[in-house]
Image (cartoon, helix red, strand yellow):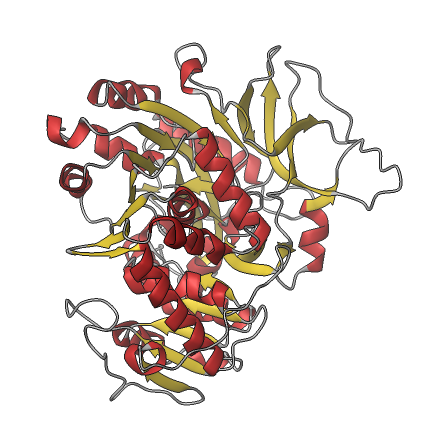
Length: 548
């Protein structure tokens, strides 16, 4: 019975332990190899004091040790917290402090970058360093903690903490409703929020996705998305649920995707629209495309021209267009057989989920009537870490449910506006809040504005998302200079922001105004600014005062 994340791995190791599970660069681990590494990590974490639902963070690029830590944390009874390797030190430190991480697994190079920020992480007790450079996977090199700052916490080399020295520890058996992971996603109030996932969420999500993608043990899945992203993590869990082979890649250039698909005979590939746009423009030789059985899109609408080009590049592959949110993992997919009839649809509910379209009072919308998407079922997350107020806003009772003596069932009220046609196919309309969806990421406008203010150069700042065929949305920043200041130095603002946040959060355009408009209640008039940003994108706004 699969009740915890590591059960997926244990089941496949028992069935066919010699089958390839995980490849990174030139090294491949079988399911038996990976299970052995996971048990060593679990034993080491237990010796470091990790107990039930204790948080273990992973701040690494995709590599063998990253996956071993994720599943080893599950086997130790803890909850893993993957931090996007693109995040800046202040952002990582916020995550570590917010959910009281006890153990951090990272590299010496990344730890050195974090050193000045970790003083604000009082719960952090241990840091484990993976081998650096090209010296190989766990066990091939001891790694070194020499010369690495460790004030307030102990620093261990991977081989010291998780090496195969004959020591063993218990493999714990969490129940399926225990906390298994916390995935951080941008929140509308600025700071990232931690979405709490149970083992049930993780296991059922893997089973549901593998069912509609028709995955099996013959599949080779290229992991091109970050493991801190729910869709990226899904590539691993979905594969392990059926015994498929995962190839890890850290995205460099679009041609690397082509090269790895050819080398490993990849059968399944999931990406976000900006990456698909780049991939579609590549030359795909027969040896790279001939094995692809399906390709899937998530993180925003794929442009029609890109979809058409991908289908021409991969004539034998079935396209899956998907919609999801971290709070419910995955919600809908469009059956490939329907793509020609309704390419703009996000489809219908995935297996073991129900999707409702409701009015503000919770009553059901009629076909053709816009309403909020509400997701119910086993994939509904546990809520937001340490944030009861936001949890209560987003996780609410199922509308119109008849309890009949049962406990109240909570659903995710997505904040997304959709409409269903007469046949029940759903179409995305827009977001109710001001969140920006760019490059597959949900970005908080407040967080961007705070970084702009932190430059010390900006008096007023408002970030807006504008539709973009390549990015989903691109970020436009309206800014005014500080009171009494001279003209705003746009390049200095952007340079300072690039030092603080990942590139996908840096505005692509800055529109400078002497003052920014406000509504009668004194708030910035975001609707007016959004209209202005759209006109700027359309070329109907005068160029005066616009810096790109």
